[in-house]
Length: 260
Ligand code: HEC
Ligand code: HEC
Image (tube, rainbow, N blue to C red):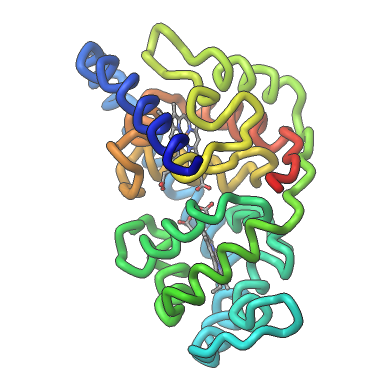
């Protein structure tokens, strides 16, 4: 069954490739976005610095105290209760919000891939480098699997409608793409209601708006490069800042049904 959806995943990726070949005209479009992106970068950097310093300091000392045995406290992996919970919460709902992603209900194979990518420095965007490289470094492969299984089984975030107007605009792109700029419908890979499709395609439903904005910008600027076949770099490079906000607002509004 896993194998079947993997094949389906590759099929979806292949479907996008011809669009890439026919869209060299959009390179100019991508380049004109650079100036706006620089301004946005500064805003991101300022927001990131102020909200992460305190938690990062606390969690770094907890991370160094992590044991390799990862003995369980009840059902909860020890690395979660000693470290990860500071930013992702004990049940995968981040107490910080903002650019700290919720992990509850995310597919285990996707979580394993991300943790492996942090450990091998394949996911090398600024927040990954600043925080998650250190957090993931001391995890053993068994702990990675254990933590991923644990967070994937937690009840996902309910989703939150913050701005119905923005979310409605985002829904249009999510479901129908944008033909003029060759943006494929997000739902082709992330599912009609953002529940994702393991092992490749992550759940987006209910995810934090600021985190989604951050990741789409990282893909757009080529700062996050761990997406298979550069799929998300292709998609995000064709989105404007306004469209990214609309999509993130819609994603946040989606109710995240349990994947169990
Ligand atoms: C100090 C805060 C902090 C701590 C502690 C922390 N994380 Fe993270 N985590 C983050 C941030 C910030 C990101 C987003 C990174 C980025 O933008 O690339 C993240 C991203 C992730 C992701 C990727 C999520 C996605 O949707 O792609 C996973 C998986 C993850 N963390 C797991 C863990 C685990 C497991 C632990 C404990 C061993 C942990 N984190 C500890 C802050 C933290
Ligand atoms: C052809 C398939 C495909 C399409 C279409 C697609 N995505 Fe993705 N997306 C992926 C894959 C694969 C990943 C996982 C990348 C990785 O392994 O790190 C991903 C990751 C993401 C992430 C990061 C999730 C996280 O937790 O860090 C976001 C956000 C995202 N996609 C949003 C979108 C949006 C919005 C659209 C539509 C504009 C879209 N995607 C269209 C395949 C796709």
